[in-house]
Length: 469
Image 1: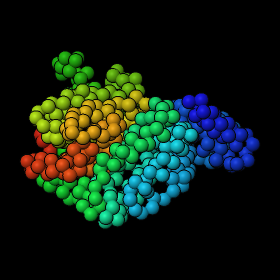
Image 2: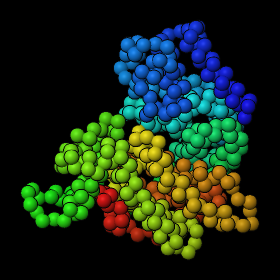
Image 3: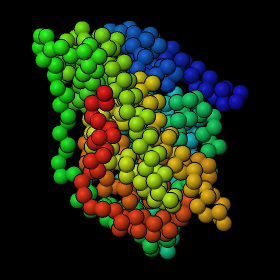
Image 4: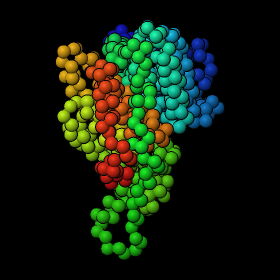
């Protein structure tokens, strides 16, 4: 710990020297980028002001505005800078066996994050709190990494070994574990996780000649499973003007429900950072006084909208899980319930899974609660094959992270209606580390054959109403 703390201290002293002497990075722009990285990594991007960034860089606020139009543009420049440096340090992935290609780059990434955790937190955590331009940059980087990883896995020698898992799930599993350690300031433990993370990837190893079932058409249900058009958002009745004789409690419930629905709708359209209370009020059709009767600001309204159905979702997943006898079918039913609920409620799903990172630390933590909760349904997998050693204990985290990386991506791209079709693919991702890829595919094929065709289950709409009242 002392050695690692010394490295971090030396790195920060180096940045201070660079800002003071203007030798290694002489420009004011680069000093501002260093400042936003260090401050956002230590106290969070949402808590930063332009005055703080400028003071830390040793320049005036006027100089800041000479270089950047706002703090979002400064964060975007920092993200691009860090991405280039990180990818350059990892090097390009050579063709060939996945392990020989990934392991060196992966080890270098973990060492770099340990040595410069502020930069890691900006890349893996704080960038998700940025506005549309920064999050577009994050998506662009992930899309590029996904494409490179897919190329690597598809180019394995025919007599060699590849990984039968979608590259986005592979990346998401690692991102989930890394971000969790960085968010909790446990970056000193990252290098020690390297072997377990590589072992979790190896759970999906298959002969290259067998092909990658998880990215083929067999991993998707037929189009008839998805609804043909988006469900219309429910319209909560507005109260009649004047005297209506409704009890005060009914009035307050109606107002609150409309405000929560409006918060989700406006933040999906404009992003949390750009949303105002005035826009929420206009969408909800209530007076501003009514908003402040329920909530002190938009953050409180956002948190209330995010929290309302949380226990309902977990209860529904638990009921679905225990409605089956065998563990593979339990996982299948829990995922089916989750995907149906998300598809039936796209606006609230966007708030809970995408916009949560822009609304502060509490919202981000709540957004990941379902991810953490889902790992409980995977524990039974360790007893699935008692005759063989189970996978590393980190595997439930990588599975949950991989599944939710795919889910969040589809929600962010407004493709929630397609999510139920991914049920076989996501179930396979959950089962393969415990059953082995071949047996997992056989189980999923059997479950898929028994899945009734039809639209999104109607009970999903009833259990998770869009208004989250």
